[in-house]
Length: 267
Image (cartoon, rainbow, N blue to C red):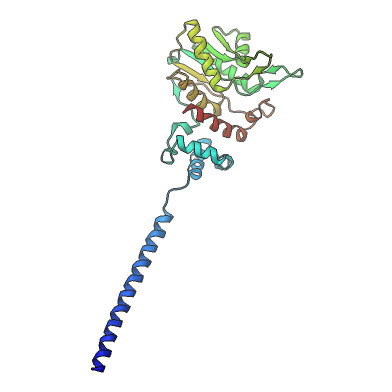
């Protein structure tokens, strides 16, 4: 009887060892599966932005610099507007502006970019706005349409003899100080002036500095110019002015984060 008891104990012990071994093997398998899933998880939001901007800018190092410099608050705001699943394709993050056939354009809206201060602190257009003015002159020579342009550009166009130019001027405050218009402020003044004069804007051609152009289009569309786009064939200026009076318009690396934050207001 004693010998039979020992045999029974040994059998139960063997069964227990087998059970424990199987249980350990199951745990190891589950841990491996978990680790495999982790390595294939989607990239974080900053990584997704960096990848998209590397493509848009044509410069991976600049894309990394821009995204690294964005605050957590800005990233949170961007993600609320453009979910991670849409980062790769959202037009909101594009830097190649939508285009419209030149012969479909009924009016032009021209946004200034930067400026300079003269020796007596007078406002001067600067080379970037001079380049924008030349682009407008070239377009209207073949497609004469009404032009709405910020002061820095409107004055040059009028001096060059371009007709039907409406100047979009800064706001002069009661104390005599001048408030420079934002991109949205320009778009709002254009729609107000057009309505006041009874003029139909129709299909709006947008002309602006290359890196600014998409935001100009988005802003114009939000202001009611729903078909706004850059006219095909117009070569937008790309060369920054290191002596611009507006520090954020002196270099591409300084401007792009500012532009991205400004786009949030268009959604």
